[in-house]
Length: 160
Image (tube, rainbow, N blue to C red; front, side, top):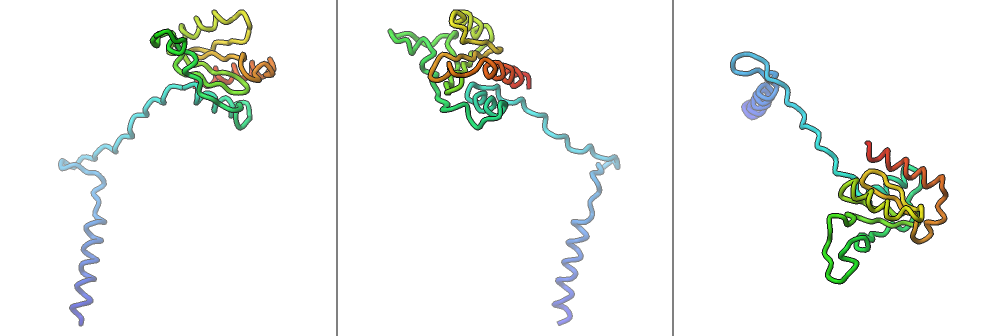
């Protein structure tokens, strides 16, 4: 009976001894090993029009900008028909809401071209490679103050 209790106790003591003997990261030559380095932070995915819609709603303190709809197909040469193919000057993404339409372009230069062509109705504002527009649905009801607030919030989002 005594053998049965001492054997498990001896195994337990040996296990604790083996597991408890951490050399603290010492190399064979007696020097201390470097602590493992944290992985380098990966760059965040670029901001999209869809993500901007959600972030802008949060930035101005509302749950949603109202009925976000992906209308990307309507802002490309391909949507114009007649066998046209997509073009580098097409928008990358278009999210239309009750408050604002958010156009995402591949570059700021393309966004600038689109915005300049639509300045006649004063409903377009360029922010880097994005354009904000208030020419669809109930967007005409969006106040000038709210438009400026959205533009400022988008600028901050792009910088962060």
